[in-house]
Image (cartoon, rainbow, N blue to C red; front, side, top):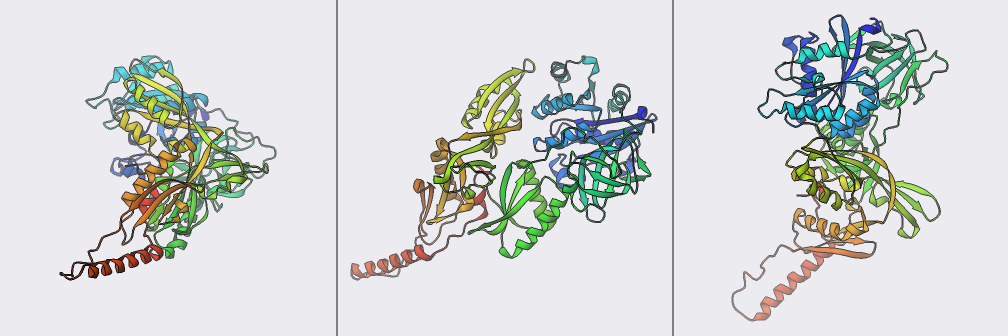
Length: 593
C-alpha cells in the first residue's frame, strides 16, 4: 500500500483511563474483529492483564478504514514500562491521548505526553468515559488545553464503552495524522519495538519498517546486539497473525525468526538485512537496566531446579529480566532477580507461581549500590549481604530519581511532608489549572520502593498519581543493618539504609518480626545491629507450661526441684532449638501494615 494511505499511531494514557476499551471499539468499528469474536481487552492476551485491568505487554494491530491502513500500538501505562512506551512512540507518527473524564490528567498522562512531544508526534486529545455520572468534561477539557496548548474544538469527547464518538476518533486519525515518510528503495532499516519467545516458533519480533523492505526468507542482522538470523515469516497482526510476502517501508508488522532468545533482538534495536553495507542505526536505543532486585526462593529445597527452569523459560521472552544464583543459610538456594520496578516484580512472581506451579518466598526488594573501595576500585552490589568489610569502603553511592506527583492542590501540604520523610528534596510546584497541582522532587530510589505509592494514594484519597525516572547515583552516609533471630544473623533480612534512618527502621522491623514469627517453647531474641553494635531488640516470650500442676501439698522444695528441671530444659532448647521463620518475615518492608 502507498505510504500516503498508512497511518501509524498509538494510544497513550494513565492506568485505567480506558486505552484497551478504546482499542476494542476501534477494532469492532473497523470490522477488524467480528462482533461474535469480540471480548473485553481483546489485545490483552495474558490472564494477569485481564484480572488487573492493565496492559503489561504492548500489542500492535492493523485495521482498514476508508481505504487507509491504520496501524495501532496499544501501549502499557505503568511507569515500569516507560521504555517500551518510548519505543512504541518512536514507531508512530501520531498518538491518541486518552484522559478519563472523572479523574482528569494524572502523572503517567504527563509523562507519556512529554515522551510523545519529544518524539515529535501529532497528538489527538480524547476525553473518555463521558457517559459516567461523575464525568466533568469542561474541567478536564481546560486541563488538556492548558497542557497541550490546543484549541478546545480539537478535543474529542467519547465513551469507549458505549462507542459514542469513536467514529470521530477514526476520522481524526485519517485526517489529522501525517503519513509515514520513509525511503522505500533505500537500505532496509526497521525498529524492533517488542519481541517475545514462542515455544513452537522461536523469537517473534514486532517491527516498524522505516526504509526499504523485508521479505520472507531474508537474512537479517541486529545492529546493536550483533546477532544474525533468518526471517522465516513476515506479516501483519489483525489481531491474529496474517502472513504476507513482505513488509514495506512505513508498515508495522511481525517477523518470525530462528533466534533462540529475546536478548538477541532487544527492544529498541535496529534490524537490517545481512546484505546491507553501512547502515546508520535508528536513534534512541538503550540497554534496559533493572534497578530493583529481590531474592526468589522456593518453599522447599527440592523445587530449586523447577524454579531455575521456570526463570530460564520466562527470561527467553522478557529481555529486561536479569538473574543470578543466590544462596542463603536460612532459605537455601535461590535466585537474585533484577526488575524494572515493583509492578514488574509482582507480575514475574505471579507468573512463576501460576504458570509453573511454584510456591515462592520473596525477600525485601532493594536497589543496586555503587561502592568505592579504598583501593580505588568500584564495585556494584545488589543486596546488603554483598557489602564488603566496612574498613575497605571509601564511599557508597545510591540511585536517585526525579519524581513528579499530580494531585488536587488541597493535598499539597501532606504530600510535601511525605516527600520530606523519604529524604526527598522538593524542587518545584506548578498548577495545571485552578484545581490540579504538579509537585517535582528528587529522592533516593530505595525510599520509594516499598509503600510510598500506597501512602500517596491514602493521603490524596486516591486522587494522587506518581511518575519517576532515574537520574544518577549520589554518595550518601549509608550503613548496613543486620537482623539476628535467636542469635543467628539472617542475611536475607539485611538492609542498606541511611544512617539517620537506621535506628527508627531497626526498631520498626524488629517490632514487625515479633508479630510475624510464631512463639517457640523457648525465649527468642530479635535484634537489629550495625556492625557489632546492636540498635534495637525485642524478645518473643516462650510458651509457658505449668509443670507444677500435678503437685498437691508437700514441701516447697518439691516444687522448686520440678521448676529447676524445666529451667534446664529451656536453657538446652535455647542452645539447640531452631526457629521456624515464616515467608512473611522476609517481606515485612513491603507489607508495612
